[in-house]
Amino acid sequence: MEPPNADILLEQLTNELKNFEDIARYLLPQAGDLPQLDGIDIYGGTLALNGVIGGDHLIYLDFKQRFDLDARMGEAERQGRLEVVQNLMRCRTMSGIVLIDVSGHRITDALLTSMLHQAFLLGSIYELDVSGHVTRRLFENLNTQFYHSSAEHKFISMIYGEISEHAMFRFLSAGQPFPMVFSNKHDRFMDVGPDLCVSAPPLGILPSFDVIDRTRTSSLLGFKEHYEMNEWLLMGEGDILLLYTDGLVEHGSNEAPYFPERLETRVRDVKHRSAREIFESIKDDVVAFDRLPDDISLVVIKRV
Image (cartoon, rainbow, N blue to C red; front, side, top):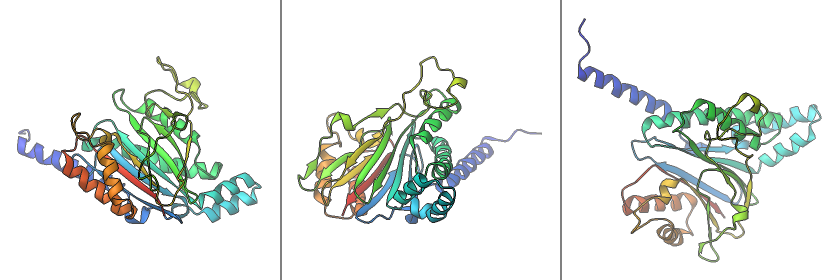
């Protein structure tokens, strides 16, 4: 029996990659996934360096759209778990956003983002059932799980934030750049104090100490301290919050960087537009400025 020739092997490999890309494409946010909040306009997306998928990923978690909160509140009330009922009620007026950046930007790096996508959503169901909201416990467990299941040179930077209709943004950062706030009143990016910018290592580098199964985990470099939540408030009408991956920070060159001056100028020019129009304008400007160095993801959150 003759071995397959190079053309046949290439065709098989191409078909496999296409099949993988088709599967991963179904995890990309759809138009109906965009959070719907009174007074808050949200839009985001990803510019993949290669193809349509890569190492960046975005998940929207509009609790009232994705979950049956009324059924959960009824069940919790029957069980006398009034704190869970109150937490679920708050979920009606807020939405979660997850921005993920896997080290690397090849199509196959989307495998890790797909794993985290499904694990996060499944974990969110249990979080709502147990606590009535997403807690840092979910991310402690995800971190330790990825420590056990991913290679040493592969790690995942992530930011998870919850924006409420009261313009409060609560988030935890695992190796992701901190958000930027553009003030409509002052017409510029605002400085945020270091006490409001607490971060942790990316997922999978160090196991979490704050998990019940820590005695079953060994680590030569020790354990990670528990995640801290940061709380920011968008004070004024028209204020804009930007979430982004490090591909945006690294865009351009040392002599002509895009971030933050060019980005600030672009936001200033289009600040009166909708979140989607602001996103599209920044995307077009990024592409026109220079060749992409990496996948770039961006979410625009505007108080209206």
